[in-house]
Amino acid sequence: MKEKRQAGLFLVNMAVILVVFFFGSEHTLISFINTVFYIGLIYVVTVLFMFTVKGGFFDGLVFGFRRYNHIMFKRKDYLEEWKKKPLPSESFNIRLYRLLQFQCYMLVGGLIVLLIIYYMVR
Image 1 (cartoon, one colour):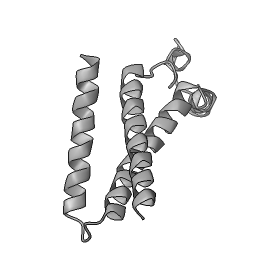
Image 2 (cartoon, rainbow, N blue to C red):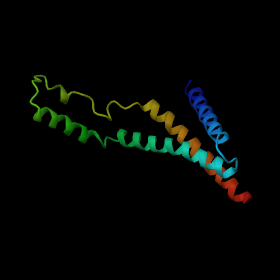
Image 3 (cartoon, rainbow, N blue to C red):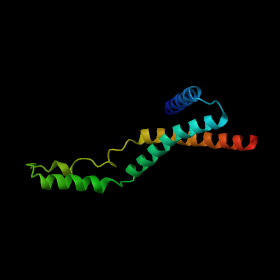
Image 4 (cartoon, rainbow, N blue to C red):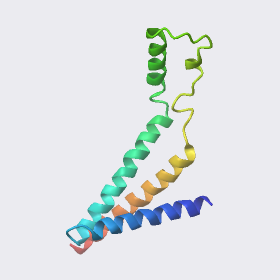
């Protein structure tokens, strides 16, 4: 099931790349490479952000803002539920991360292959 989902999303990505390419003004190899780069860049930025969240970089920041909000606004929170709320790294969706990571690898790999073809033909 996992491979079907990854393959399906990759086909959707390729369809989006082809639609954007065909509606563009130029139909050259460099234009196609640029289109793959832009779509791949979205995945790279998303995966790097998710990697940062997964590592717990924002946990201290979120905890500090929750504590500051609790102290400054003097809420009548007898259970202190702000301490029990999950931090960003605790509520992380690893399946989505793996799916987007695979798409990122495939698009960047395809981009590298296209660049090799471009420079060999040129």
